[in-house]
Image 1 (cartoon, rainbow, N blue to C red):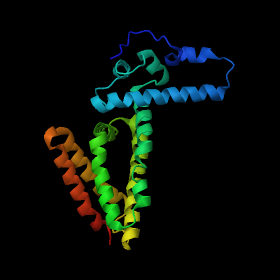
Image 2 (image 1 turned 45 degrees about the vertical axis):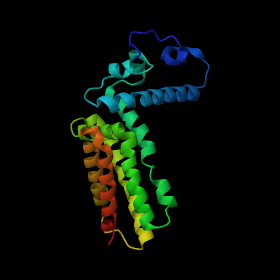
Image 3 (image 1 turned 60 degrees about the horizontal axis):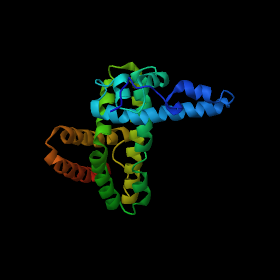
Image 4 (image 1 turned 60 degrees about the vertical axis):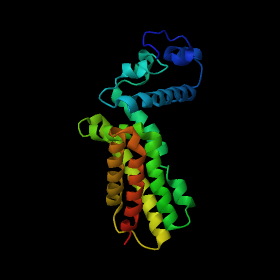
Length: 227
């Protein structure tokens, strides 16, 4: 585990070196390097945030668990909230399209239903801590104004993601949806959050059973979303 006390020797980890490396470099290039570094820091911080959660994570803690010094982290992000906002936006940018391939390639409603249910459970298995972080931040946004904009933005994107699944499912089944996008999202999100809680806090030996239950529940719920 790197120490915050270590010197930042290589120019790639030192913001001052970035500025001094080529003072004549075009501003667009410097801006691109700046954003690349912020992205690297966000990716590194996601691991710590997913392990410790929002309340227990500080910029110093993130630095201690990353290849970057505390000074470098603080140079690119003025506060924990700014870094976390960047982290969540980066992670959810890929999450909100995770079911699009299933939507595009499923030929029948039962196929889409089955594949979607299985993929939902699989994301908990593969990325459980990241989902825990999302729900942690969504709850914290009720008390932290700095988090509200990004949480509201991402929650809306997740609702649209679910609606793409539901509307295509309805199209394949030849029946209209029986619910509006917000309600459909709320029902599926509730099942997902409930299963994530059981997966994260229950006995490790029972985790696959939790995911099997989620798959079965989503499989049963999907037809009820149609008129």
